[in-house]
Length: 398
Image (tube, rainbow, N blue to C red; front, side, top):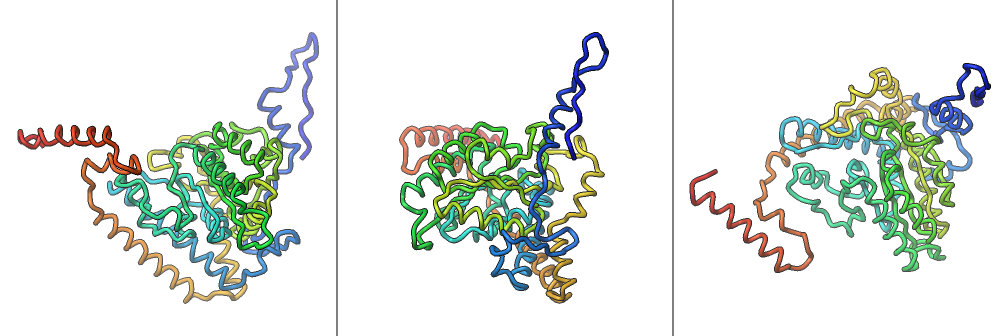
């Protein structure tokens, strides 16, 4: 669609110049907003000569594996949401609707690659082999994250918006300094992928990460899950053009992909990671998706978005399009779908039982893991605080 004709200010007339909104809409109309799609919402496979080679090893079993991944992760997410409503978790950050983006990107990572999440990447954690029960402590406020970050190649969740992008840029620069890119033996190469939302692109940390990664040709894939709402602010309030175009200003490629298409997300992520491992520098991926639930359980999305918008995106459900593709092409039968459903029920039961049985940490827990080695000042603060609490017990105050 061509941009609207501007309306000039004519001296002596009442015709106004275009409003800021009209100018922005005009600029957006000059850009191609289409996203790469390999599996349509109707479950039809779309051929693409550039990205199909990155799916050459994907057959029926792999497709069924992606379906299983997304169903289990969604069930885990819904269980986490319910546990928060029951008072078992302090807060929950839903990923409903973003399963394809996370599973596609997560399954593209190799064992040597490193992933830096924000606070919504439950699907990526699943792909990295993190026990989903280990995520509950973060939202129960009982631990900082208990998995081995180096073993899983998956760092702790980051609550500060965009901060993980700077951390990932530094780590990826280290990979380049250590000679982990551009080697003839591809097994010696590795890359980093950092996950953030569209709202984070307005944070300075993200742009600083772009600068450092670009200047040092760091092997870093910036994976932006554009779910179109930065809490209550829509994307058009943050950017005049699609977010993937921001990569141009920093001198590296950007691509927009259908974030509800697990095959497209996998292919584009594999391509981007390959570029990084070859030593070609960073890549920005904008996975265009939609947040089907609230930003967190403290948020009420009905206050800022229309139900019609939500209903439209339900027709683009990432899980349903894979299910339809498998069923229509005779790649999976009802026994398979029933078995995945039963597995998701069992997972939900395990999550509930684990959450209910989680011990309540003592007050000294807040002083743990602040420093790697014991610190006398911190130890003194801990002892003073515990003595203070003990005083209430001696007086019978609870």
